[in-house]
Image (cartoon, rainbow, N blue to C red):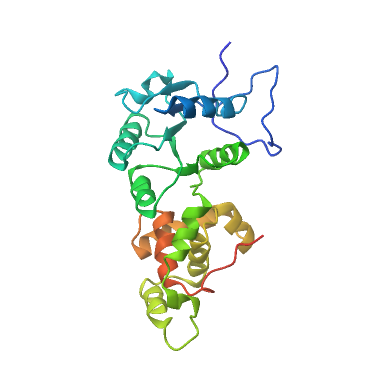
Length: 254
């Protein structure tokens, strides 16, 4: 009997992958992968989880996700191809399954690829070097509506900030950045949330830190993106890393 397909609902006690005699409801998942070894490894890691791939295909298949039987909720794509081809694959999947969440799985990324990937429709970027439990948790976050980036990318965003940002109180070095914030008419709360986005914090963590609801955070994030003229959270983080003083946003350490 085929497993029931329902929208993903996280298990609050989900830890290591557990096997059960009774099939768990699953997320309709398609794995798009050209590497036989990676395909076998992913299927083995995801077996017994809500994300066990029901269909595997290659990036050269023109139908891609159409063999899933129903529109997939999650598509995981191997990122070993050249960037142009991979982005075309993402756009094709987005056309075939507009509601699906798309995750790219690769060995390494650069900021330009992340930016272009988000613009094409990628919801999350996962590393092949991650532990299996990290991959599974990342997929959970993506299915909950969050964007996922490897820490190395977040660190790169921070490292690209101007050197004089490290000493915002010396002279007038911070004034141009603060002037830009004023020109964008960001409220004090929006500036706080923008600082959290710069650190790569998800909405749930920001809401807990600032003691407001996630729905309110989403409204603020939309307003921030509109005011600073960017398309997504990653671009907002890059924008903020170049303009916010080190202490310009709320700390999200917990």
